[in-house]
Length: 629
Image (cartoon, rainbow, N blue to C red):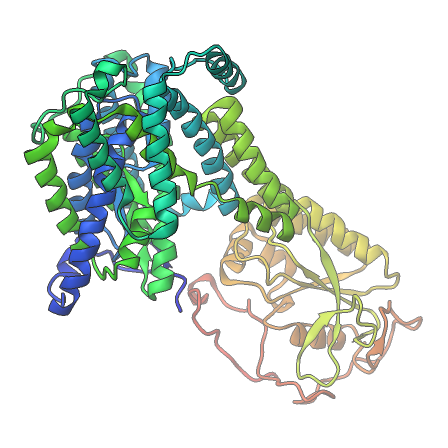
């Protein structure tokens, strides 16, 4: 099974995936896709209303986003099943930004929400065309889990006032909890509102236990509308949605204050990052299960274009939805035809019955939102992180606490920053292993740690650097290598294995140059083995290749050790268990190697640097071979 992910390097782009899958569409798939499309529409319409209110925008902007996002992603997306539309994480972050701009719940909320979607979309499209889909990798699973957990708590806390019919408190989490508790204890809750929300929550959570695949949110929406109209709940103080216009708006650029444009771009970038983390995770999951591949950079373009379209049509920001994509998979949806059919159904709702939604109790929307985000609190994953690696559960905890204390944006930035710091710290923890010959295996070398039976050659110290050498690790690697050399008095030759390094920067080249000078002052010769082509190129350009010598770079440890022993007159000293320095009689006769040594190792290997830059092979190209004489 494939890992389900493909990035930009080394592949041709397919800008319109629909042109690839639509001509190959099989009629027998239509039934499953039609059922999946109906399920998606039944889930997406009521959730879009709730997510729009969650964002602090009019409910219709959530509806506008559903068909637009579904159609655009079906044309441009590389996933067969991913459903793109309003999601809780993007919506709550949008609401946070609208509150920051001071427009949440005002007439300008719709324009600013659309502007945020437009900004996020432009960031994603540019990132996709630049081929930097890899940036999403900085959002590790523990960070995303912790971030979503914190967001879920904020979402539920924000919906509780609507469930109880009390004023929405402001301030930090602790302050809001205190004010909510005070309102409830002093009898401020509305009994009719509490009854409506309690029945809605009971039906949603209880119904999903009985029939998980049934669209309970749609049923609750219909029952809420019927009850509100028949019982005139608004007259009893139950808050309702209010007027919802019919049809899609005319596309256009959102109208916002010029002074806010810079802040909107930054906020849009944050929305893009959060939406990308959720959408790409869902796409990867179902691509892996379905044994097909997605293109990470094309996903950025598709998600970005969907957000741009939503922004132009006055909608809110969108992203890939894990829950609705899972519904497509459960319904045996095979392609994006399910998304296109769902878009048609959603458009019919907008055109035909949108005004009917005016009597919908706000408490019903809040219940739908709470039910939708409740399952996002993945306590099982937190426990798994704790069992596997303590640092992962710490990353999740930092993300959760950051969101609750600092808000969604700064909480996310804190978590990503902590992740990057942790990455740099882990990269700087280097290990340099002393290598010995693996008995009874041809040309095999391994660490002598916990393997005393692996012999070494007197006077020749073989070290393997177990971490890439770059600007962070250059100095620690240099210090560790010198410490190993000092621990083996009498070393005449150091053979350094650089296989773990596939790139080299100026700092690393300078560190190697300094190491070479120190070793030569101590009378120790340096050989480099298993050196990657990009590293050889950097060594040549820095002048270090000429300083070391072309005949001091070799393809394998065995060949480098053999040449070092021959050159330094150590060839007749057999390997012995343990780590050995040079023998007390350094001037030994130099012996020529036969075509095959004691262990029967192949002599076809040669040193890898004895050619001009023009002769240097490209990456993955086989190096020219010749027999040694």
